[in-house]
Length: 238
Image 1 (cartoon, rainbow, N blue to C red):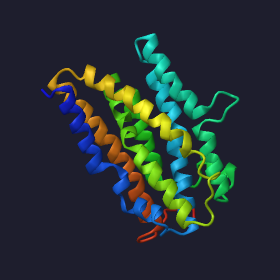
Image 2 (image 1 turned 120 degrees about the vertical axis):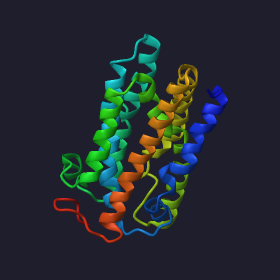
Image 3 (image 1 turned 30 degrees about the vertical axis):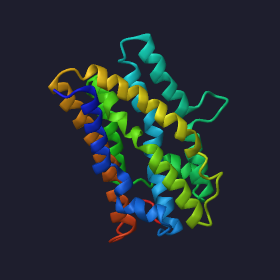
Image 4 (image 1 turned 135 degrees about the horizontal axis):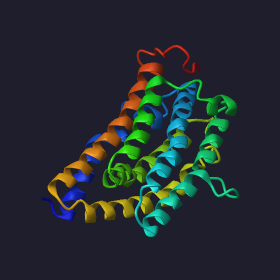
């Protein structure tokens, strides 16, 4: 049985090892080594992940047992879906794909998705719907590591790509404050409720699963658009 502090350290160690900031595709993206078409492929495929987050959160919201928990998780839905007046993360991601010259109807149709993107994202939504509430909340803890990747991504892309502007990357600015807030709540919940060795192992496994599916999405992008550069039939072609 780990102490709460030891459990947090074990969770953070998973991020140090497995978070997709270390993936070769991301190093190319942040370092200015991709073509515009390759950046378009990343943004188009990542849209499906972004657009599925509200569905994932809504499925968990329905299972939360207290008004306090539901209010906390409802805020996440607003962050991503907007409130009808202020745009949310999904709309801001579409501003990114617009800025990259992708047709919005094509992006939202999902016609150009890589199969691995669809499989990975659908697996995440299904996991959150079917796993315990504790495991589902633990799977969101990749947000502990996201401010670092966001800062690196914004700085690198603005520096290296002349087709990227601050307006194109407007999605990321609110996430610099939203993600730490979300992560702090989820981490506190996990540390308080993972009160047996079995529950602690389950939350560690949930975070590994989340890191693995983020990594798998970039594996597919690398294979299709970098090396060997073989997009499957029907997938987006720059």
